[in-house]
Image (cartoon, rainbow, N blue to C red; front, side, top):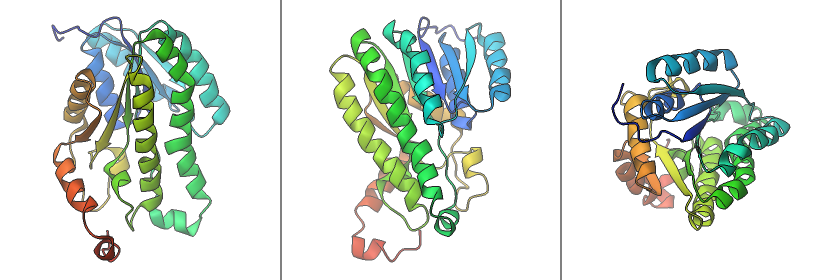
Length: 254
């Protein structure tokens, strides 16, 4: 167990906690003494992770169920988290999302609404609902995991990318709002990570280890970084891609 227990007294609500990155992040904050609330749909899986965290690190770990496609469920989650935020000890890590193949969405366009609901509407509803409690308490850290896919619309995933672009714009505005009361919002833009979401996709042979990336994210959050590309090389990659002229970019098959 780490001798660094600087997060004792904090409670991290981790949404999408069954994902590889979120699970790694739970370990990253737990080893430093934070309590965790693991939030997702597969509560049996989350319960096993909660027991592991408790045994390994001697921290409090609980489980909460929420389906982000259920608006009433998201509203109820807000109500359950508000008291912790009002006490000034709630931090939040949002890493949930869906990424169906672009071809599947084109074959059934109504699936686009499902992607928007989970990837954009749900986090906006959740964070706007908690914002007043965070503001009143004047304490909290919010980490929202987006994607480099939101930096430019690509042929291969522009529906998913559009939700991540919207999420980045929203979190920028939320950072402006909450920062005035001392609450920090970090937007994370990962490249390819070695998780279930990217398993089997072409071109991800250099996917990063979530355990390493989670440490980078926590360091960025504690240092009040606004936007973090992880691994850092993606900042350079996306800077180049962002500056490719549209006349050329629209001909690329990426």
